[in-house]
Image (tube, rainbow, N blue to C red; front, side, top):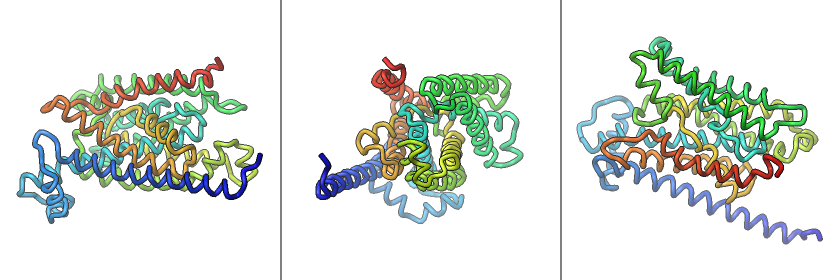
Length: 358
């Protein structure tokens, strides 16, 4: 029986209502967790003092590199705010990259971490540190090297996995795990030869945001914003490609070009995130899959929701990492792995029929 026009409009209206409610909830959650993260720490700060610092002239002084006299404003603006901004950029980047990869591979287990992109980018960043590129070329050297090796990793994994019939899930996962392990081993090798740069390389391997500052924000922000906006621009083509490449081609989509652009842009935002945080896994797996269950597979709404959700999730995880054993601090990559690994195993079990054909 064919659904009448009124039924279709009612279903569309309900879907839009659910989308708006979810976006409002995610936005409120992002601001709520950000304010909470600024308030708590080795010194707890009341919310009114936080807002007072944010809306004071000291914010401009901090961004322009001037000295702040007020100690509370200094904690809020020079230490906690840049860390919160970096956490949101990293979480949003990894989540939107995971959304795009899950869509383009039509596989809910695809993510920058599982496919080895994070390890490849971390190797590029480590190489830049060990070879001293950042000293010679400035702060852009590390993100540039992270992007190059993220891009190389992506095409190695994709090239190994692709067949004339498509990209088999099993081959994709195994290739991603193997190539990611190879680059992780190379990062360990960099650690062995790093000498005085040992602590910096170890930082990349464990993932952390302890060294966040406004300079990193200024380097990372344009890459993340432009890359994420461009990915959302391709969300309609991605929807059509998820249905089938032949179907997308018949509707006028240049599948080959769109796929290449989506992969390049996913590599860009992943590299931008890894270059300031090191290897932080599972964010690009947990957030898109959870939101897809709530919102459905439409990437036009799923991508912006993943950016906001990933940002809120990452701020929350970083807050746990720096407060759970205070005054010491855990690398946030450990926290996301403890949460993400069981989630991945659950997903693997739930989808085993699709993967292995059982």
